[in-house]
Length: 471
Image (tube, rainbow, N blue to C red; front, side, top):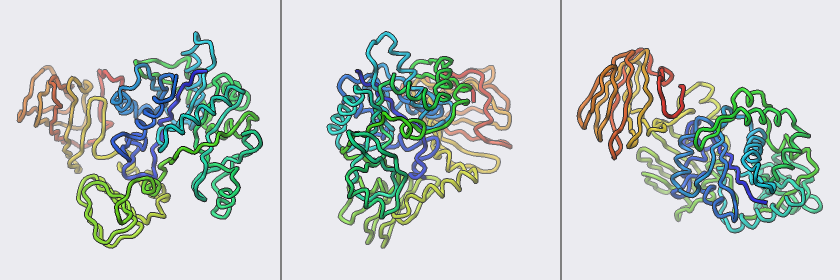
């Protein structure tokens, strides 16, 4: 039985705002060390003996940044990114991955073990993790659906629990408890934190899903059958997936099946679900502080202070988190870090851009950073990777001025094609079809000044795009 890793890389990690945004979610951030949480997960998966290249389930909007991070590692040749056109929770995602893996393995013979892992978890002891995976594999060979139960080291009220019965059987799933109940669970030794990690024999998984959630199976069968391959990408059919019920693997399957078992997992797990959780697992200075960026401290203890864009000076703080980015600052008591989600919900409800993206937005061709924004004009810094080009496009409501500050730009401006070098510029009139390309071997940087009655990113009409984008 070969192991097929399935990495669930959706979600936004709202409790790590303002660092995590809808377009730049937690799993793609480098929170500890040089690698993102997704990359750390992929490195861990690469250590599993005889594992197949991973299937990574990701939202359509994150596909290029995810691909970039996977290929930066240079660990896998035949990985696949399974693109979700919309979020439907983990049950449809896992079902779709199982159906895709089954389709890919039609000539393989033996059943495949689907190892389902969230992309945004930290595991301090990879060797112990691999041993636990092998234990789950042995249970899977016995016709069991395994979930990884984390051995608790404290009475935690922020996690759901799994209660273990005889012979590893899952006796029940328990919702997040209050503190006295969590203390009882810690003393009992048969209660484990629910990690959201699973090991499923593919054929058994699909058979049980068919029994308990046939609607999800039928919709995802169509989503895979009508899906479209595109290099490393495979797009689930949007119309079919739209019809699928939205549910988690726990609710849709694990709480109903009589084949669920729990594998005791003790490998230094943390889901980095809040700023406090990040503070707990990160190396601290003599005052118990976790500090990142341009930060000055005076009489500060047990704080997390992170600066991304400017100097942050703190005096006399205790047990406080301060997170600064170019467009937002978060300040809160450390013990209120779970409440960051409440602020994010308010930001989302007000339709503020700080929920959706940072001032720097990554695109498959490079990135752009908003430097100034006003009612009728905005200024951006655009960076285009060597050999990359933007779509052929036009705008209904804005004119654009481009000034090259580094590198060389090939510009299609209406009927003209021109080459611009440093300190040279061009003007793109409203309604003119245009395109920008970097023909050189160093990054192209230019300043773009937009002037018009409407400056939104949805004022783009694309005519040709090598990245398959329609909007």
